[in-house]
Amino acid sequence: MKWSQYPESVEGGNFDTLVVALEPEDVEVLQSAEIIYRELRARGYKVLFDDRPLAAQVKRDDRGRFPNGWAVEIGHEGLSRDGCAELVELASGASESVRLEEVVEKLEEKCRRAPLA
Image (cartoon, rainbow, N blue to C red; front, top):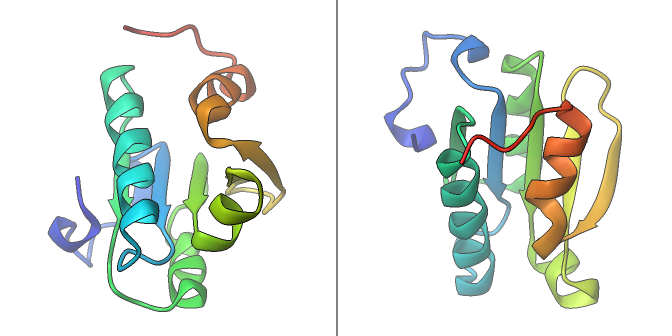
């Protein structure tokens, strides 16, 4: 589900993963985020896709509505520097850079989930 379709009055309990396109106006960022979003959904994750045209800090602040689970943040800087996204544990705020092609596998490892697909 896209964030724009998500009712503001409902808290984040319905989702276990956020995929955040930090600069959705950047075609590479948006396409990369959409690929991760589709792959996670195909594996059974309940994913909220944030492609709102807002500042990255606003999107990061909104993560507070989701006390559990994970966020995958995809931005121009990480993609252009080393092809990475940030994988963020929402409860602690701890994050690590993960190569884009390894994000889904790394998330499954951290969640100790077997692929559902």
